[in-house]
Image 1 (tube, rainbow, N blue to C red):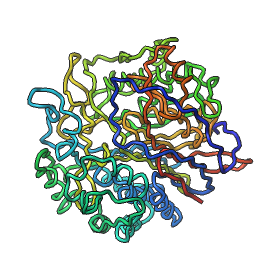
Image 2 (cartoon, one colour):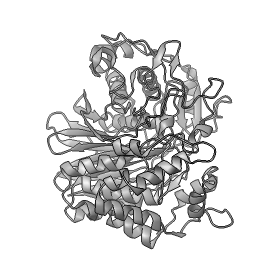
Image 3 (spheres, rainbow, N blue to C red):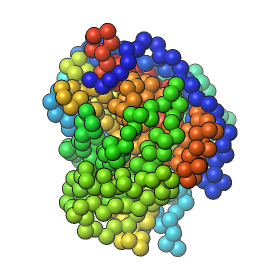
Image 4 (cartoon, rainbow, N blue to C red):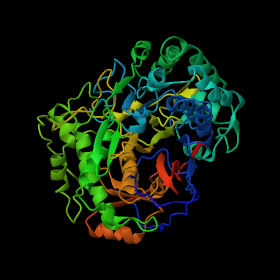
Length: 592
């Protein structure tokens, strides 16, 4: 069992001083799904089962399925369908997902990542002058849309682990889409700041009134088109989405965009397959940590960060009253630099890109990670170079994609102790800004590198037909090594920052004895092999100055994670599930 102090149900608020340090003048982050406030969450306790999701209506849908005897996968399906309705900027059936499942003895990784159409080439995001396209010029329209994968993935998981009928799992979302739901504060804020959604007539009519004003907080928003789509899928299975009218509607929407058409076809839709893969599992001190394998980079990068930090005395650097120790931020950021450097060089779709040495093992080798850890000095390295894992013989270029934070995470434990950790996305805020049959289409192809080559060679994450773009999504399980018990299910949205967000919680729980809510509440910090990034409004000038003194180039900016987690705790001798939800978003945990 993870060492965790006995807690009350309601946690005291974490304290953090507000920083006035300026953002570096040359740093202009693209963070389309930005901040909507910070509201302290208490944490939630349950004895039998629990779901943690980014919206209360979605969490309730999963809870009702668990209460009816459904499995963790059943609850994930119901939760996802409601999330796509009430949190459409982040995920939905027009996107993709990664899902880890634990059946009491084994972890499986389900890959529902989108794929590039057969027409895609390495020049997909290149201008006529062989330059990378401006980001939003690439995103908005049909060019960026990949074949959605989430429904095929959920259907595959349901075939193996579902208990309730498929159609039953769509009922909560269909009812909400028909009767309407109240627009949440977060959705209203993001609609207010959104620039491109109005350009699509279908989306404009749904999200805005006749005067072009966004639907306000509390507005009863109905989506009969999505209700009809979900009813068809509920009755006919995922084939109703990937073949026939819905597939044709998607292809038409993509190909007939007036200024930025794409090449996705009904053939691409019909040929999509979800994958079952072996998870990336590694040991860290008293625990085993399992994450998602490629095409996600999350599992490997987190395992590398933990492996590097295992050589350091992180336990002596615990935060006090939620305030980070400067040396802990230094070590965490430097480990992140090293992991992100390897990630950008080596990770891509495993069916197109070979690992150094033929498997993930060289990247996770303890001796290799000790060599990487030895590069950490008292002064920041600022930018790390990729390593040469044992057996590496590859000449690869560095990735140039921009992964953005419009994503959502679901953690679930059912009455049998089986669990799901699922991260789901349409990539950019409101995806490609193309709406069809009641849902938004992804812009996932912009997760590929915009450049296919550089001076070092071909880029692992370059665009190729049928390929899955690399991701940072990091659904994660933690098990106690001695008992093999599941002790944590965690994950987050946040684009390329997901790895740091999840890593923060893992260090917080495993090294510092925090419960999952306390660890989620910690200010977000880290590096993606660039500046050291600190969460705006939640760090002190003293921390900034201490890092600058160590040679860090510090950026203070919004870091809107959306961590959702469930943790096994022992309270007064009784084992319970304790759920945590990110105070930066609207999520809750709910269970019995």
